[in-house]
Length: 397
Image (tube, rainbow, N blue to C red; front, side, top):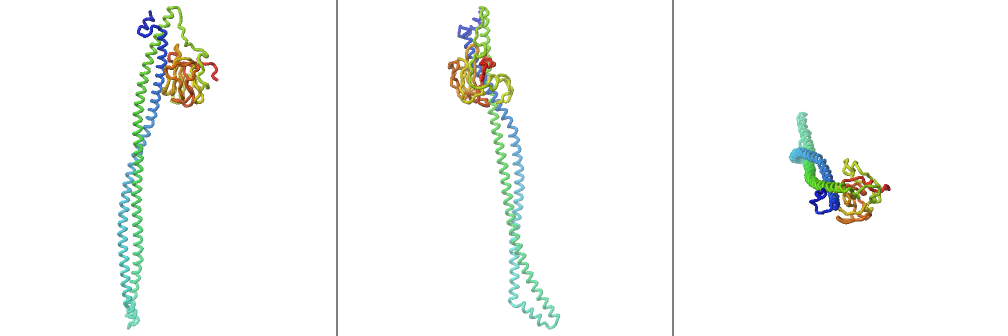
């Protein structure tokens, strides 16, 4: 009567058949949940990585903005220096023009003296000194001769000095002009470089914020899918437990027992790959996610491309990509038992396919959350991971 009540709402009248069906669904739900959990974990890790970069990006933006502000100040100073240099240049041009005019004046004055001498004025004065009637007259005439000579020397000195002044003024003008050009170029280059760096920093921050939003959305979606998968898994598991209890009660009432084929024992399953054990079942520090968590299977290291074989006959209930598991296959063997194979390079079977014990189902790889070529092998009872070594041959060499 109890069995009839429990299965009143099921499509089959055979509780054992229902049990087999629900256990298969449970294995599928478990595989989906594992994938959703890994996807959520990966999304969380990716989000944390982006969040860790954001302060540095913001600091860079603030720093480059400060550099731009400083560059603008330097540019203003350089512009002011350029204005001063241009003013110096203008003054030098004026000085040069004045010096040229002075040189021309000195040359004109010297030309007058030459003309005067040419006309004989100087010779007349000298003759006058010689022909003076007394010493006083001679001295006076000699004074005029010396004044004429001094004036000639002064005129010559002025020509030389003004010529040098003109040359110095021209050099000063050249230096001032170059100084103005250098100051303007330096200011422009400094400001442009600072602005380019600031623009790059702001672009990087914008892209990082966009990535942060994307990763946040991805995490929310992954968490929602994980919750949905968990709800379905818990519902199926509860139904499986109800059916198991009903079968056990029926067996107890009839005086029999539950003859499940899911009992463990040494050598029950076939070794799925030719390799060596590199990581055992149980809590460990995950080298990929860098956290302590349950390692739900055993890792067998092997070269990439090494064949993977079904540990027992059964139906493929999952075949494809599954988050951190990478290329992933799960086989339901009946009697609560399923096995799963992760990180494959290639998968040789498809969902719903029946496989025989020892049949090739894929090849070893390093897809998903993996740090090297290996097979991650899981054994599950009612969807719960158990120690695979209790089901495999004693020698794993």
